[in-house]
Image (cartoon, rainbow, N blue to C red; front, side, top):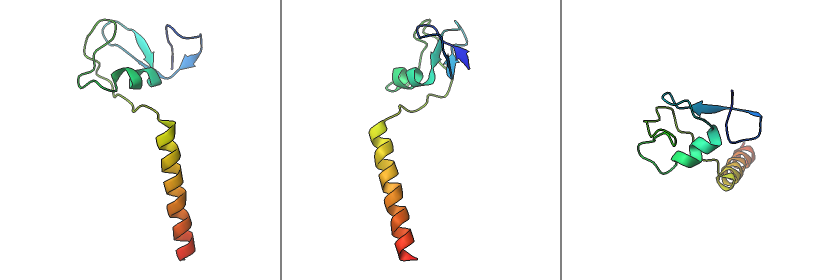
Length: 79
């Protein structure tokens, strides 16, 4: 966990550039690099070597939850 610049003084899970040290919390990393094939640091433009998390999409999560619960109820009725 690290304190990240540009945000309120709270602790977030994040990543930092190995060259310049700029830190970004994971949701920002996901959103910033979502359409980039070769991620680069927004500050120094060096290669960003970390895993890029997926952007959280509440609608997809809701749909996935509905389909999981639908399958589960089908299995329950079949037994």
